[in-house]
Length: 372
Length: 84
Image 1 (cartoon, rainbow over the protein chains, first blue to last red):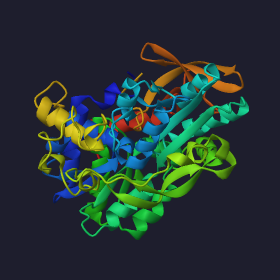
Image 2 (cartoon, each protein chain N blue to C red; image 1 turned 180 degrees about the vertical axis):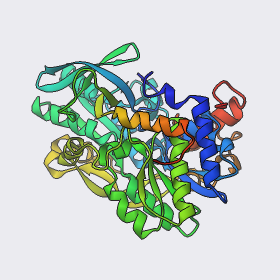
Image 3 (cartoon, each protein chain N blue to C red; image 1 turned 90 degrees about the horizontal axis):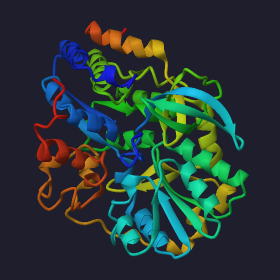
Image 4 (spheres, rainbow over the protein chains, first blue to last red; image 1 turned 120 degrees about the vertical axis):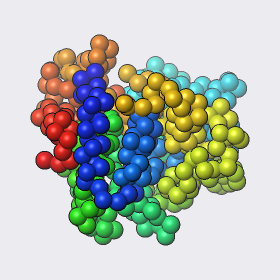
């Protein structure tokens, strides 16, 4: 596939690794924010290729992983209502709430559907006028324009039976929280490229300056990740702390202003709890008052409950902040596996524990395990 | 096109715009992803045209890919350089 394969070509990746190593005089600690980048790093063995020059810390960029338990419990309760059809992305269905997952709700007779796009959920509402269709909306800023666009279509078509249970999260406040934490080991960030495709890079400028940390908007293919890390290393070596764009084919400094305007027509910034991390100030996006008629939180207030306690054995919070590497968790690969996960990072395909399990336990020398 | 896996994550896939249409008031495009064709919402890219490569996430095109920048990334790697 054009714009993909050429960024996986081993010769190009290895030359980029050489360039990075020449630029580096010590081992720097760089956090990649997005789960898609983590996946590429482990699938292609980039952590091992860069090991002398860079320690890659994995960040919280798995929206499935940080969706709070109370939201999952709410979605479960909705799926169990006889009048509700609950739709979401495929990897939400296996995430355990405090009393089971959405697959379980479906097995017990709940109407739970997997959709590719929020627009498919709107089409469901059109086809099923007798049912209330609720779309469980998770994702970083990348996904928000699609959900906002779907809501605009639903309103234009007068679909009173469509609603959204929104659990959207924002990257910049999470970077600040991670960098400011006393135990933080992060010296530079690789920002999530597709978030910046929508949002641009302006909101990272004050963070880079105030917290003295290089931030490089980086893509998802092996060559992108290595080049992003190399730009971060050059800044660190020079004592700089700027915002840079590695992923220039997809990220403009101004982002996509039309997509951003659409997102903020419907959503507003709110404080939000992140699973494993706690309440992140300005860390989420919720429907504005003007869209209350489509807001499942307002339409089904009786489902709001206490935040249930996390399973004590799961150390997802430490993993998501880059403090604990998954293989160092006592439960990893024994009491916690993708078949029987204790926490969300072991569930989602992009979750960091699942990625370690897949590439380092289940198939350590597998086809996808190395770039060279 | 990546269905069933990691879609709530920021996975976005490049594809080529075949043609643009108005569908019940929504600007849409048929997009070719290496042989698989899908109808995609083009509302946030008013300037995208047939032949452009767009980055698609959850049924929405988010950006037109910049071909010159794409080639520069590859050239830097070929020359084993970090930056321009």
